Length: 425
Image (cartoon, rainbow, N blue to C red; front, side, top):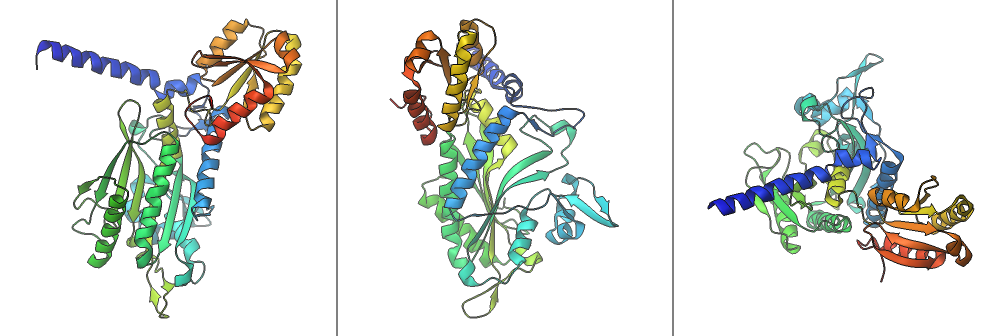
């Protein structure tokens, strides 16, 4: 490598570091008033502010909609459980160092949950299942807690308390391939909706001391491999890299800076069905062991939010933006019209706010752009008389005057389509 090429790479590296600093989710989270941390609450425990809460709500509503459409049933499970539950599941043997210490309740040990799989297993066990009942798909946006070391905490990317988009599928052997294919399709749809289409995919196979019969592993690994091939997703095979309880697919998404982030995992589990003695009544009347698939698409909601903030540098697609439109009255006499307009926009499904401060309009436009608000709506005497707003975009574009109804139709079309542009024409 010559000196010129060395300098070029050095400059590119410095530029990338500077851009990463500009996109740092911790800085943008503070500047955009999305979230914070407090020493009094504790390290690694996120406080979502109203704007961040709006984004979380939008993401969760979308998550629930697509999962219900895909045949998942919503569950809600406690944030704590008896120690014997986690003994049966094996978490106390294999995961205890990541669990918070036990609480004594009436002389018995209770733990805050580090993951929701044993709770979903208990829901499955609550009644006798027939082969006709399967597959059963249970999904939950579950609050979980893990005792991460202070030194590894990193904003939203590594927290002690987070919400996990957790789901578990219980199915028959003949359903395994279709269920894995369904998870992959749902994954590609959801991640694509958020703007991610470049992936790294890994398939991890049976380790030397894998639990369960070899034929179980063969069927599961074959289902994972065939599903990836069916969707033309090339993968890197990690031979022997699976967990002791089953093989898995891991999918990493590529962000705007070219970094890859682990989000999606699709994982078989031969351990929990055995430990909890799960069964269903097969067509021949005999009891059979169901296959169990763990899967998370977004992973930690907090971590995924951190990825979104850095990927978009805070300038989110309109459907995700906490405030989608900001009304800027030129004078106080325009405030009543702005309030009426804000209500009309709300009824049209548009999140709007009013900047009523006694500042120059040019200053308020600049502030709205710094807050990454997609639409800036200026209101003066002419706009009031014409039942309109003067529409500016956060990138400096100017759409000029639009009637309230015309603007609402345009913005609603952009929001409902979850597109990445800001106009529908």
